[in-house]
Image: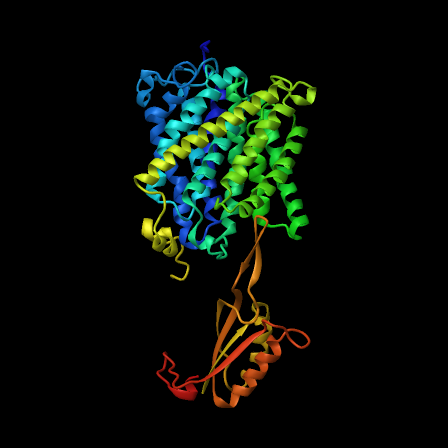
Length: 416
Length: 119
């Protein structure tokens, strides 16, 4: 690796801003999910996102960054002794040839490690033991996220060397979280009242829309900041491209979801628009710096079509992915990763040019992420099921986890 | 004295308040407590959409008004509520109901007055 001689202030400023924006997505996600559950579970659902900031925030400094981006052990995992607690990482050291301090890169990547396990919480909402969830995300971040991030994003990682394109986390973040969400939802079984056919209605879609707005805003840091991997100075043409494709895909997806709903039920819902926006953002994530803006419009629209269909599927198949973590993140991530291989024009041309090589590589990336994260979650989930237990008691589920687990209620509106 | 409790459609509240004002304001001063309640009668709840799934909420939002009146005003009050709360034409399922119960005592907290003058 070539070491850059001096700091580029523009790049550093943009990466600092991007890192903060990605962190803002976590409260955004908490609001997005928190609004969709019932009143009795609003705090525990939001906590599942917030707690990732506390847990993975510590894990990342202690070992996470080293495991994901340390000296590569054969392309499978990173580690360097000086990265233990970041103790041997001088704040003056620059990251590879990127002209930004390595600590800024550590923080940027750390926010990704925080939000990814939090995405899973959507599938287990309203019934998973909080204690088990906390242990689960710590183990998941360490044994599934860090290796996968190393494979795809470290320059020595084996999937990176194979040429799999994942600009900002279609495979590492969304497919990994999505399939893990599905596996956990299956291990947990449906919410007891959902199984009895009780209607479940969101407590506050205003929160959900606010959250979707924060997610959209933060996603510019997520995607345009990820230009750090491919260009230097970092805040350049690719960052601008990723910013534009992110905006385009989210808009097209929001529009398409509204149209599909209008056709299906005759009404355009606010939750539908919010879901479409998120589906589009998910799908453009792996493609952001590799495709043209017009292709992002197509990709976003397709994402809403496919994700809408996937979300309908769950009631037919009978599993209870409470807030559609798999239906949106898993399915949107798979679609985005594959379409990256179709629409990409830089650094390689995709299937549109008649060459299907990249599409094949993308399919390998998708399969690896599905199998590794899916099996890994199955193992972790079963271990927890046999030890701490995954499900709350029926009484707790009925009473609401807010009061039962946290000793609080989210709302006291009647109180003066 | 009677306690009149009416469950009505929320969108009819404005008309009901206006009608009550017209019949009660001359002597039996107009007063009212309003709250939002949920429930169902023959109306079987309302349908909401959740990501393309139809979810039937078994309860509908209604407005409940509570009003205590002196005996001379009971029929006037009932008449006003029925007229204002009934949907256009012959009315519809879900227009609501009025419950009338005897009212034993009324106390005005400020003055300690009791009975019909306190109402």
